[in-house]
Structure formats: structure tokens, C-alpha cells
Image (cartoon, rainbow, N blue to C red; front, side, top):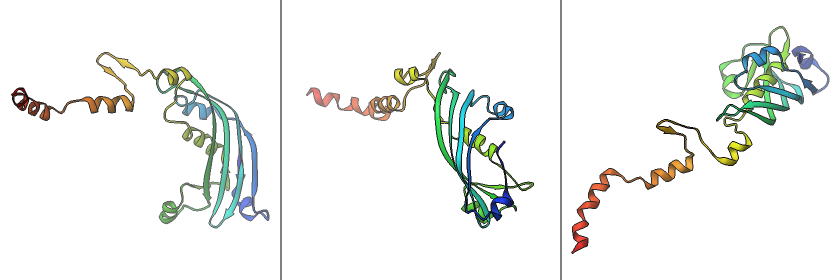
Length: 181
């Protein structure tokens, strides 16, 4: 587990506390993420903690090989994820003003910064909202059922532009007689 002492980082003579670790994901993580992520391997985190009053701040880069279900067919899709995240850690409950100014502030309990949970949470947040198998990407097929089908944004816009406005369709018949004269 990736746990660090808040007070040691805060009081360190070194400006930066470097992190360069392989990460093993917990069973609890896979239990809570089973619908979003099927597997994750070769997870590596690098980055630094530093004290910038009133926070210990961590800037990290994570790389991982993951398997997630296709959002179209639920077939497994292998992907390589690389993402960055920054978190601020505080000994005391942050003020509303601090919460408004900073993206993420985590209140530290028992002087322990749990980088493991931060890596796990950010791994889930980094997953794309649309995940497709290579075949699904190449074909561009969309699911369909009885009386419904999913269409691409482009197909929808084309369909809308070719659609006649019913109010104008009636007016079109008004001028038919004048054209025949």
C-alpha cells in the first residue's frame, strides 16, 4: 500500500518527496469497480509531494494497462492509460474558500496520506466515456432493436436537414398553380 506521513513531508528538509512505485490494486477496488474495469496491470505511479502552506500537494503521473468493457457491446477492450492528477492534503477541514479555489482537497486522518486510494480513484476517472473494440470503431455499427436504433451525430444531423418542416410543406402546395400557368 502507498501510504505516506503528512507530517514527515511537511517537516522534511527536502523540498520534494519523490514517489516512483509499482501499484497493486486491492480486491476492494475491483469489487467497487467491477462494472467499469475488468482488469488492470503494470500500474506505475511517479511524482512528488511537496509542502506549500497550508497543504501537502502531490503531482503524479500514472501508467496502466487496463481491460474495460466496450460501451457498445460489453466485449473486453485492452487499453493503455496514461494520466496525471494533482491532489492537496490538509490536516484540518478545508474552508469553503479553499474548496472553491482548489480542485481536490483531501483531509488527512491519523497523519496518513493514502496514495493508493488516490491512484485507484483517478484510474477510474481517467477511463474514456466511450470505449469501443477495434472492430466497432472500424465498422461504425450502432446497436438497434425493434422500432429503435442508435445513430451517429452526423447521421442524425443529416436526417434533420433532409426533414421537411410540416408548416412549410402546406405552403409549398399554394404555389403549384402559379407554376403551371
